[in-house]
Structures are given as structure tokens and as C-alpha cells.
Length: 124
Picture 1 (cartoon, rainbow, N blue to C red):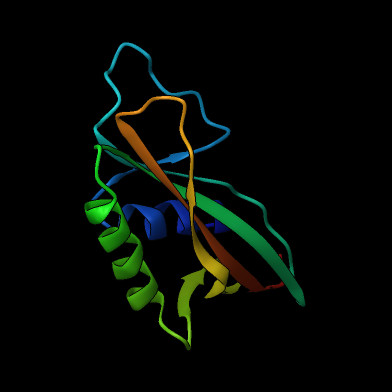
Picture 2: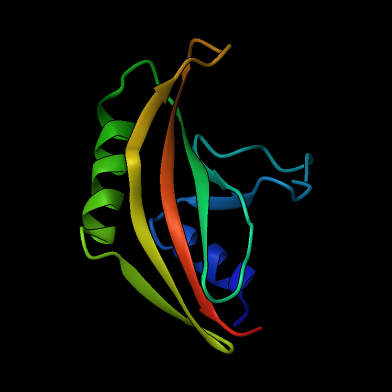
């Protein structure tokens, strides 16, 4: 698995559709009511990259989306998560601040931006 695939697998592991921000989404398929968009940037040893992802929930309440952000933070934990990739590992850690509520033009959507840092412990 390469580094971009590892990020896709990581963000997909939270029970939501995960979409790379730079990918074209098939507009013939309706967007889900809950999903994650995330950015992909890569580096090599000793590279640390600061990345964001956005949780998107169709809701008028912050409760469910805030709980999902808390669940993701708990999963990553203070020690971070290490993911194996071809040529090494990715070490995903909580950014600071980790979760930031954002205004959305559509009143029936809620968005939380998640900040992480990723150490690319890879040679290629």
C-alpha cells in the first residue's frame, strides 16, 4: 500500500465515505448525508506534514458530528497511530487544535475541520 492509499484507508476506517479533496466525485451519485473529505500530501524521512480533513454532516445539530470528531481523536490517541506502507510507516498524530467547527453556507450542514500531523517514516 502506498502513502496515499494508506491515508484513504485511514479516513475510510471511521464508517463514513472518505473522499480525497482533489478527486473528482461522481456527480451522478448523490452525496451521502455524512462523509469525510481529506487532503493528501506526502514526504520522506524526516518529513512531517500537517494535514486537514473535514467531517460533513447533514444536520441542524452539532451533537453527532462532534461525537464523531471525539471518536477519531480517541482512536488516534496521544501516542498517535502507526500505519505500515510500502517502504516504511506513517505516524499519524493529533494536531492542535484538533477539531474546529466551521460555518457552512447551507444551514442544514455541519462541518468540523480535523488537524493532524503525519510523520512520513519512508525512504521512497
